[in-house]
Image (tube, rainbow, N blue to C red; front, side, top):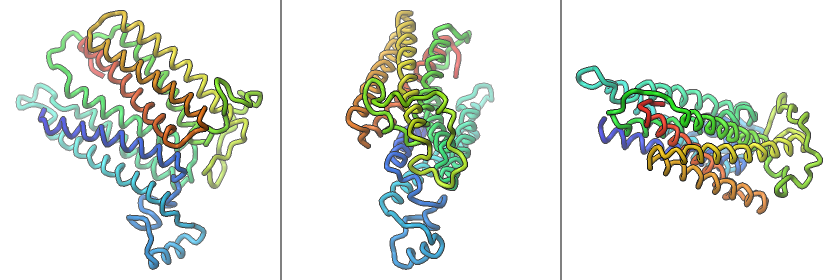
Length: 337
């Protein structure tokens, strides 16, 4: 495994985190439809601002009004996402060319892993297109968010795999690894619920701590009121009580997630498997408590944009810390994930 390939993976991980952050900022600043077409912006590679360009926009998009700030937010996100896609293509090409060593006995780069990443990037590109062409349909928006998190997690997992010791033997999966997987699944559900809150613009509809100030409007039945059949979903289309219920379910599952990760972390920490695994548990715990604090602070301060953005970034970091813990537990027993 060349040092350059490892650096390319690390650069892709860093860029993926940036792309996820830019995607969150695009959603939070209501810039998802800053450019009503895809992949360009009103038919241009950059945001149109010259008089002749605006004339073309007026002709081709008669009902549109160019908002340069929102358009640039959207386009910057697309530029960085495209760059990430190119980097993943490069990772896949190198993995294919160097997938075995000279004796053709040992895999030295995770080619299947790179191939999965490539497939995810292509699907994520489709989701990005549908997000715009379907006018922020919440199911598509949530899928786009989860796709970004998945690509980020796969890149970090690839980085961990290329640094895995080569002398592991006798692979077996222990109960501690299964516990960590349970914690990871619970966390992914919470991230999906957070994406559903964001996709339906439901965050401000549940103010107050620890429960919504207007909790009497909560209804499990209203959760089945789906956002479908609309021509435009910007700023949300669901009734107030439905959005309140969506947000409150997100809060309830946040408590389930916190208790699950604390329990899982305690069980693994007590096992004294290794100092590295103990450190990984501590990292998960620190990010978890920071995320809980941020969630409460955001509600208390009435959902400021930058703090809400940081809440999204912390969710990504919590996911990555759990992926690392799962990887270390698997590697401890000579297995790979």
